[in-house]
Length: 453
Image 1 (tube, rainbow, N blue to C red):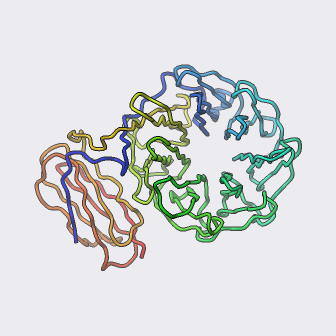
Image 2: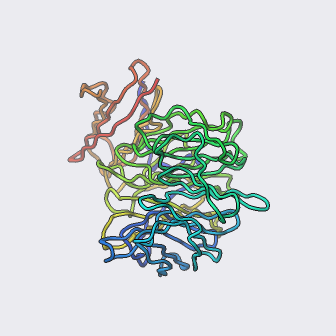
Image 3: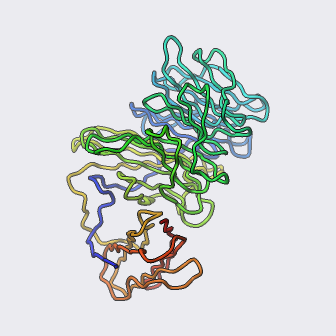
C-alpha cells in the first residue's frame, strides 16, 4: 500500500531542531585540506591539515579563537593527521615533520604549544588515531597505527605494542572508549573490542572482511528513551554505518544504513540537556555520484537527512565537530565541517547553526527540485521517500528492480509546489537492491535503496 502526503514544509528532524545554511569561515586555514577537526567547549577551533605540493603549501595544525575569522598557524609540517582532547583538557595530535618520522605530540595549553614527540612510529608507519583513558596514578594512552595499537600505561613516558587478538596488518583508523571503559578499535580488518585496557582484543562479527571501519562514535540513551542500551556506531570505507550494543560488549555488529558510493569519514554526536535531545552528524567523502556532504538526524532509527545547503557541489567533507551553546531561545548546536579538496585553495571549513525551537515546521515553498534518500535504508518492509518541487508540474515517482524492471508507480499526476513524502511497502518483494526515480519537468534523479528481510 502506498500513502502520500502533501506538506507545506517538512520538519527535518523528528524532534525540535531546524537548520540554517552552511557558511564558510571568514578566513581559510593554510593547507591542502582538513584531516581532522576539534571544536572545544570554549569555542576554540583546532584543525589538523595536510600539505599540498609539499613544500609549497604546508600542513600541520591551525587554531582559531574567533570562530574562524582568523587562523593561527600553530604548527607547520608536512602533515597533521588527527587530533583528540583527553578528559583533563590535554590535546594529542599526530604530526609528521618530514623527513623525520611521524610522531604523537601533546599540548597542555589549548593547542598553543606542542611537546614531544612522546612517541614516534618507525619510517613508513603512521598514527591514525588516539584515545586516552583515565587512571590513577597514571592514565593510559592508546595510539592507532599501521601496525596496530601502541599503548602507554605511564601517561606517555613509554609505549609498547598492545595487539593481542588483533589480526596482523590491521591499520587502526579510530579508537574510542565508552563510559564503562570498554575500548573499540576501528581497523582495516573490522572492529576489535577490549574490556581489559587493551590486554586482549576480540573481533566483532557482522562486518564483511572486504570493508574497512574508518570512524567510531558511542551513542548514549536520553532520559526519555525507554529500555535499549548504549550503542556503538561504526562508519566504513564503503559508506556503511554498522551498530552494536554494550549488552553484548559491542561484539555483534548489524547494518544500520548505507550512504552510497562514499566513505563515512567522520561522525559526531551532541546532547542538548535542556531539551533532552541529541543530534548526530555524519560526513560522507564521495568517491563518485552525488553522495558527498553532511547528513544529520536526532533519531538514527528514523534515518539521516542530507544537509548541504551552502556547501560546494558534492562536497568532499572529511571531518565534523561541534558544540552545544546557550542562546536566548535555549540551546543551539554549532557544527563545523572540514573539507579535503587537495588544492592550494586552503583547508576550507564551514559552520552551520542548528537552532532549538518549539516549532518544527517551516512554512515555505521549496526553491529547487530535490529527491531525498529514502529512510530508513536498508528497510523492512516499508520505507519513506521524500521529494520537493518548486512549481506546479506533472510528477512521476517510480520504483525499479536492480535489472531495470518497473516494480511500482507511486505518483503519476500533476502536483502543486511543495514537499511530499510517500510510504512504500515491499512486503511481497524479495530482499535486494531497488531504485526509485523522480521525474518532474526537466528534472530527473534516481536513488538506490536496499530491502533487507
